[in-house]
Image 1 (cartoon, rainbow, N blue to C red):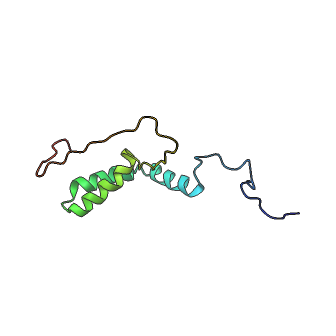
Image 2: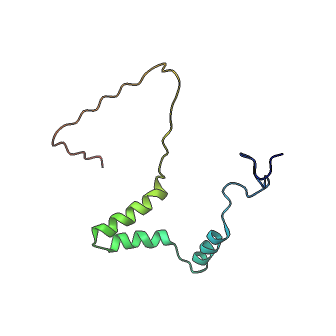
Length: 99
């Protein structure tokens, strides 16, 4: 008879629900709430006040993940029914004004 854990079987099937925060996260959030402190707003303030472009970039990079989270790649398998064709035109010296 096999002893120990079985692959793919939880030791506690009634464990934490998905998305439940741990005690440390709850403590830190409550710490900020009690002091009326929002770290994201402070980061925005720092980015606006500093002249250092490296600090500005770091702040905006950090804040961007809350605005547009990273997307995961997804593998598509199976037979192609209607293939997609992409055409990319690159013009030398063209400046994109949409950004």
